[in-house]
Length: 336
Image 1: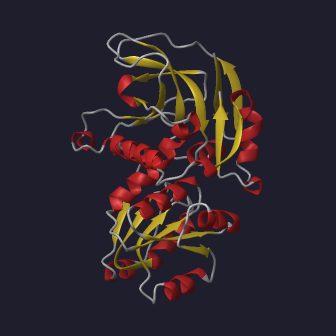
Image 2: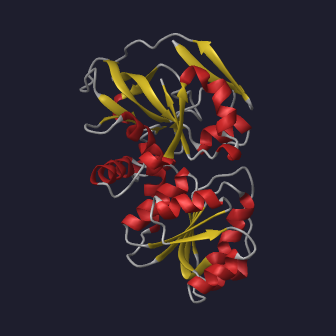
Image 3: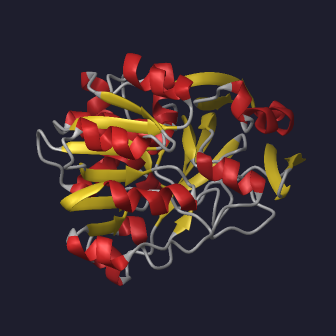
């Protein structure tokens, strides 16, 4: 079968590899769609933590069950999405139900080879059959689950204010689930086109151009109270540090981004606010199920976010162009 491997930063290669064979408890999925994520872009650019080369990228995956091993209850022909976080089930996090931060987690496309291939073998518990949704939607469930998990972590209350910093696909997911929770949502980004999209397509309550005037604008919009819960989805250390100044007294700051850098903040400012600082990593099955429910009832939108499509074997040429901000990619999806 064909597979696309990131051999080193900046290099994707098409290769021929052995097709998997059936094993007990395992499912072979014929991959049909692959969402391109910030993780893939950072890995391609050499900026992804927890990463080694060469690696087959791809963890936003949907497809059709090709075959199943002994003991599997799923059936060939079913449309599925894949939960890409393989947890050990034994560590302190797993025992407490936090499989998303397992001490020995194996994420497809990061720690182990992912889904930029024609067929992928996955343990049955990570293959989820869903009826009535198209393959494009299923491929973006994982991306949206990141936002759903971050919002669930934050325990938002109806009527509270939320600021999402970073209007990429993850930020757009956070924004939509925050609105679904009843919050008033502000979105901040440097990209004016993305901000307009968030306002017109995703009903952001306020959009804010990142820059020197943003602090005063947020102060004015909130009567000097600032923001109850700030989410960072920028992947930019300076932006992550600046976000501490935007949190209201008694508020929370949720870091969804992960960067290869140390993050610094002023302890007096942090302390006087009695700020809650938390990380949000990956998602759990509960978050995936919530995403599917919201897609089915229409409270979360994804179709407009998919702006670019291409074929698997064209990825070596396509991915560098999708990484270029001038090409206005929000979410790219690969068809296999």
